[in-house]
Length: 242
Image 1 (cartoon, rainbow, N blue to C red):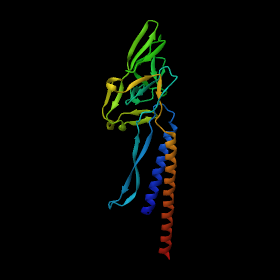
Image 2 (image 1 turned 180 degrees about the vertical axis):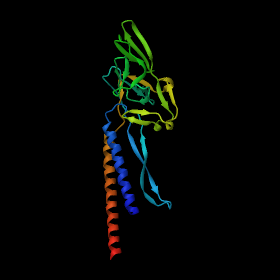
Image 3 (image 1 turned 90 degrees about the horizontal axis):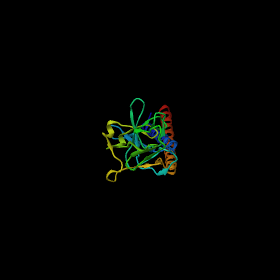
Image 4 (image 1 turned 60 degrees about the horizontal axis):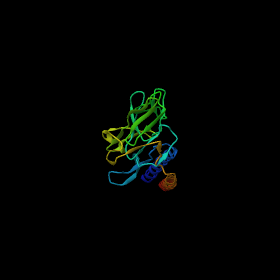
């Protein structure tokens, strides 16, 4: 296979990955706290510095703040600023998310749609209501009066780009993101908790559609490059036989 055909074929593969990434963003555009991803690529060079095509180097997550909106959930919270809510599964595995849509479980814990438990909060059986302050302090209304249940803390990482996506709006720590630090919301002008609100995804539908059109055009251009390279090989083969 010729170098030109390899380069064009790698471009087609790169744009297919690009399209798949954009499609995933669009599929999660309505998921609270979802952060859009973009595929990253690098040029493949030969020892003589000649270009051989394109290779994917990974995906990059954009942790830009999404719009905060009022929700109908009795236990919904949103983060106004950087940071992540800490959730755990039944095996004690820890994950981090900005999706603050929770529901009360039978055992009084607050769990998300995937069953992960919000760390540090358990609602009493006789609670008639719950309030969460900007600093993360959780207070339940009970027949005996207000009862302080604890305080939500937010996880912060030196390099959140190093987090690994578990799916949707859930992330897992890796050595690349640095050590996790817990902080109290609202301190020193930092992030705050907004009770009764959810953070929308930061996916722009219009921008994503424009990206799809651009990727499709690039895919078609590379496909024509493959066709041209194939035609050149066919002509060269015929000349060599003649």
